[in-house]
Amino acid sequence: MIRSLFDKKTDTSLNEQVTLAQAGDEEIRNHLLQQYQPFIAKNVSEVCKRYIDQHKDDEFSIGLMAFNEAIDSFSSQKGSSFLSFARLVIKRKVIDFIRNEQRHLMAASLDEDYENEEQMENPSEITAAKEQYERQTEAWYRREEIKDFQLKLKQYKLSFKELTEVSPQHRDARESAIRVARVIYTDAELREQVLKKGRLPIKDLVGRVDVSKKTLERNRKFILAMVIILSEEYVYLKDYIKGVGL
Image (cartoon, rainbow, N blue to C red):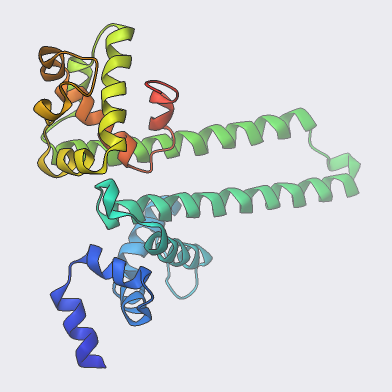
């Protein structure tokens, strides 16, 4: 059995191991959960801004469960790597855990305050503090998505700066380009071709979209970036194109 597991680990890629785990291979799943504990701890530590003890900190347990959840929900058809996907899942789950813990602490604090009215804080100050915390949490999520998106762009030899320069200036042109990106994303064959090769299948698109070949070529980098956003688990970046091109 040990030899069989060793063979499976060495002869298959990470994505293939994840697929095996999804199919019910518990040996592979346990191996992944064990092997990637340093990866999990590193990402949890980045959220918590401190060293994480794998044996003592609850946050690590949340990260481990998030990694296991990522194994179940990962889809290679979206074009992203498993570790990129798992990183986002881990960080979201941990920040949600921290946020819930903060809410419980705040509720406990309010209960104590009500028991001693002389020490009770101003309700408006409490509300303002909660709103500030929500804004900070949301800002953290956005920063993490943008950092991950920047790494994805590098894989396709694109940069954030270049993307701002090549983005269509007019609203109609942007919406048209996003519509093309949706056509690509909803077609598994086209999506795989774009994400693997890093270029638009212009010939295949002409005739399928109401956009000229010249326009497709001019906006190809922007369209590619939109396909990347659609293919990833980006909650906030997807707001940018929410409802556009449908």
